[in-house]
Image (cartoon, rainbow, N blue to C red; front, side, top):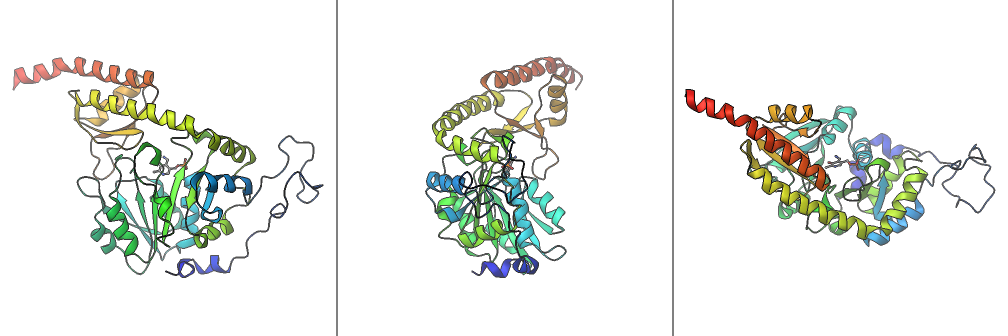
Length: 356
Ligand code: PMP
């Protein structure tokens, strides 16, 4: 597999911006090279190579440093991939639906066509259909596992089949990995030259506010991401906070345990409600719930200050709401509110029966 062949010609020719700070280890020299204000508490540009952070990430994930790149959220990684590998007006990508909306938005911004293939009835990818949708201009296939908004892990054999039979990149987005008990795809990058795995600090790690995402791939792909990213994409505070977070992984694991237990309890209670048609199994920190009338429930919850995500307009997700798992108090408030809606609806049902 020749990765360079997949890179847009203008990117291949690009002479990257050489930042004043890329060759200097901060704190050891008199720094008069970057027009900073020497009096500022955060007056220095952050390390564009993220040297300390990448070393800590490599150690934490037990992978070589040149196989990992932190980004300004994994949304930045998605955007960078489109800009490196897709030619506006020419390339296309395959996005199995329903899934995370940002892949399509990033494609549209780049002027890249999207080919939508439906996941099957269990929200699993049909490898034949997905591969069948590719053509010579298909540069990437996006697979989200656990999938947003459906919550399920994608079958690893099917992902493997796609990886083995596609001549472009396969992006496996594992934003919700920590809530599942599956083997991380990042451990298989050495097997697949066309695999890019994404993870994030926004979910299990509880750091959505500082923006930290991760790309794992072979060095050839990582160096292209390095070449085109903005030099100071990861600010100093984020780099520092991520370094601290890695030392607090046990706390993250405790949160994950609580969230999983809350998710399972919430799912059980939801299943008993009159309005609920189905609660889909989840390996993530949210539940996709099918209602008789999702829009009506959504509005009533909103009126009571409870905001969930209406996913009903997504293909295959008619009448569904995606409900994030919050604190135990927030979850029981949601359940109580839904239970109350149930009881207030009962007279309607009784009346309907009386008149039918
Ligand atoms: N991938 C998936 C599947 C997501 O659900 C999200 C956030 N909703 C992201 C990526 C983006 O995460 P980040 O905060 O790292 O940009």
